[in-house]
Amino acid sequence: MKITNETKVGILTAVAITILVLGYSFLKGNDVFSREKVFYAAYDNVEGLAISNPVLVNGFQIGRVSNLTLIENGQIMAQLKIKPDYEIPVNTVASLESTSLLGSKAIVFELGNSGTYAVNGDTLNANIQKDLLQQVKPVQQKAEAMISRLDSILTSLNNTVSPEFQKNFNNSFASIAHILQTLESTTRKVDGMVGTQSNRITAIFANMESISGNLKNNNQRITAIMSNLQSVTDQFARANFERTIQNADKAIADMQTAVDKVNTGKGSLGKLINDDGLYNNLNNAANNLDNLMLDLKAHPGRYVSFSVFGGKKD
Picture 1 (cartoon, rainbow, N blue to C red):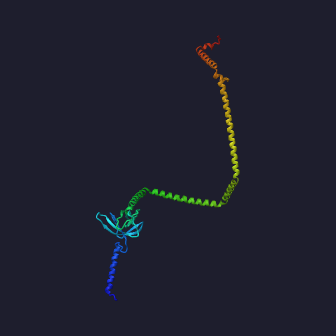
Picture 2 (cartoon, rainbow, N blue to C red; picture 1 turned 180 degrees about the vertical axis):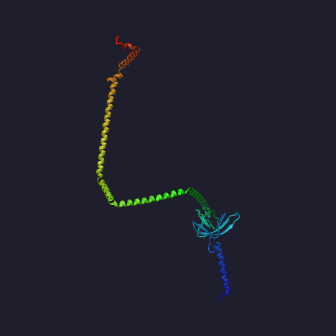
Picture 3 (cartoon, one colour; picture 1 turned 90 degrees about the vertical axis):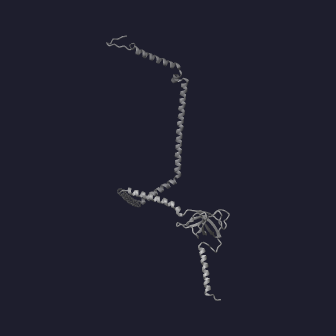
């Protein structure tokens, strides 16, 4: 059977129309070859969101936005088609987020922890997060303010620094460079000195090592000597302390004996303290001496006589 040209043209036209319809549906986000689950989410603003934008979970695409419709309350209802291989908990939140600094948007599922899963046609909880530019804007404002302050400080510093200060500053740097050169020269001299005296330094270290070895070998003897010295010191300190205590005890005993004699009236001091008669005699003697002095003051002629011509008077 021979196929006519008209039949071929008709078949090609039908195939082309079918491909065109399928392609148009695919570009609109419709997949006619798979049985996807359909969910909905309502947003107040979907700026930057377009049909065929992805639906993501932790950065992995599980579906796409298939349609956007304005509803009566002014919100935009987004139709989401999800691959049938994935189960979505009913408390999942469909967040509208930016995926780039250019403003591209995507629906990001924050999967819930419910054991009940959403069924075809359910409306999920929706949330809108700030754009990346909006999140960066406060930081940008702070950076601009900081740059402005820094520019003002640099301007003030530039106006404050005089040519004389700059000259002194340059001289200071030159002095520092000269000091570093001198230090480098000194270091070279020290290195040369160390190189020339390396044999002596080696001998000194060898002697030090020998001394350390001798100390290590005679460690027990040194320990014994120190122990003996400590023992002698302890004995000497103990002997002096015991002798001091004995002398103190003897002095206290002698003092106690003297106090006992005084209390019992023995000796001159004991009699002076305990004998009332001796006290009274001393008191009477003092009174008589006082009366004598008063009488001598009142009648000095009774006791002292003198003559201008040497005459004697009884």
